[in-house]
Image 1: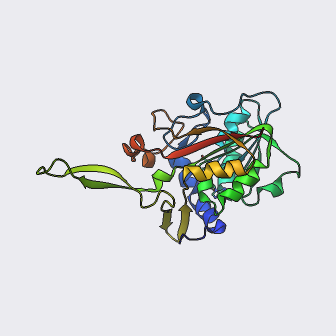
Image 2 (image 1 turned 90 degrees about the vertical axis):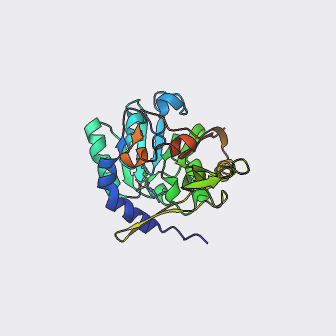
Image 3 (image 1 turned 45 degrees about the horizontal axis):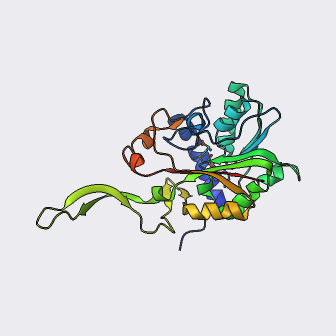
Length: 266
Ligand SMILES: C[S@@+](CC[C@H](N)C(=O)[O-])C[C@H]1O[C@@H](n2cnc3c(N)ncnc32)[C@H](O)[C@@H]1O
């Protein structure tokens, strides 16, 4: 039985680590990022074509680097995050880039209180934050409800394989020969991958992954048509990187860390 994810503890964790996260992780405003060590929008080309008057809503925005990138292309951006400390970083970064972005401290669970009743967006997006919520199906439905007709929802999140354990195995070779040692992935259940739990200095945060088919089903149930599904391999020159992620080295050449969906409202 997996633990219930407590939104207050999750927010508290990000408040506590925000300063370290923003200085230790290199997150570029020169490309739109989808996840650690993987190519950005300049390579993947998943976002809709930009046009004048376009609007976007980002949830779990961190320091809002993706919204800043969109704002530089003329998109009117709204960006929210549960962590007050992350939003403070976003305010400073927006100011230093001259980006006029509507920012608010709010969770996936209550972002609607900052929007007008009928407010809809051309693009609703979230990069690597939905793994921190208790009820992703409900959040996908709430995000989808804010996508305009003809608009796009983009979600990137932790890939279910990435929550497996990287370990060393002995595998049989030909009879009479010594077993061979290989490094690989141990995943006790693909259908319920283990939580990635960080529990240190009184802080507790849970990152939870789901099978690819669950996300697909939630997007369809929310009335959207899935347009793209990507599981990118690691690449050099990624717009989101850190020493910790670089240490995963060859693992990220063997399995995807990030799952990306785009889906449209017809
Ligand atoms: C790995 S960071 C990603 C941030 C940003 N998207 C980026 O790529 O830098 C995860 C973010 O999710 C936010 N977060 C966690 N739980 C959340 C929730 N329930 N509602 C909104 N944001 C949340 C954290 O505060 C943190 O800023």
